Length: 375
Image 1 (cartoon, rainbow, N blue to C red):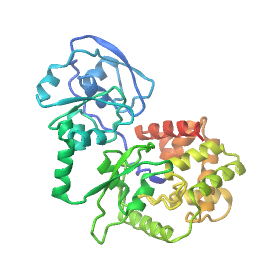
Image 2 (tube, rainbow, N blue to C red; image 1 turned 120 degrees about the horizontal axis):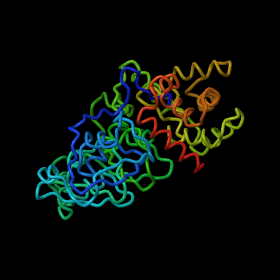
Image 3 (cartoon, rainbow, N blue to C red; image 1 turned 90 degrees about the vertical axis):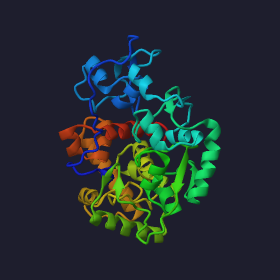
Image 4 (cartoon, helix red, strand yellow; image 1 turned 60 degrees about the horizontal axis):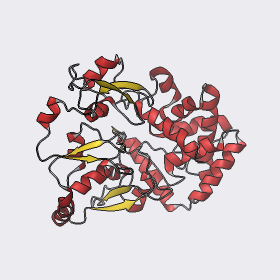
């Protein structure tokens, strides 16, 4: 999303502090295949070892960059490390992840906070969990979950609601619907603001702030806080679109497909990007002032205008879609693969060429390629 790329001075790369390169299990090593969303710190936590041990064992030169499908040697399952045994209290519970579960689901079930589950397992809010993973829960019990939930409600009032994700939902759409920020929903639900939502997923919707400064468009995206001027412009655009009549999601979907065909762009690719960016919601506006169905920032709009030979109004649905599509066309012609074109749309092609894909860019590209196959 050309839309929400932090400036080069603050690249969204996960920094991992390396621990001493010593193994913490004694049962030998086995092969692990890296899955989408994995980080070395999460893999190390799952297998009771350290990032340093994995780096040393596998000869990894860039600990912040591991790719889905890559094979790593990890300590063999079955024998816990001495450090893990010392740090896990007797009250800890081990939960085996089931399909569809998230960290927030698990925390709610055991009546503990999302942050405590993340800390207990050496995970980040951006980490993914998979069916079969074992998650340590400290200080809660499955039987006490309802009691803890009721107690929290009594002490804090109606601080949050839950929302079950339906087809077409996006965080920006839900933020506008409930009058809260995208980052507020992400924090409350223990997910990243850039995460792809799954149908059936349960999100926590925080209570809307009573402050006069509250606004559905926050000031932070993917851990980066945008300048006040950019956020102010984004909020103005949000307010304009909130009052306008805009095409429905199904109309936006049809518009994206027809515009892509007209400009020689794969309609499925354009649809996948628009869906991931906004859920085909033209009222979506990000803290980076990425606007509309294709989430185009002003600089992207200027580039797209030069490509079509006229000024494009990003607040107009057809112009917004045209901007995103012609940028995709130009990126496709300037790169050797669809994956690089998609990375350029999200991170900026110059940045991709100079720095390579950031970790969140690789996840974004994988998501888009998967979505394209469903369109």
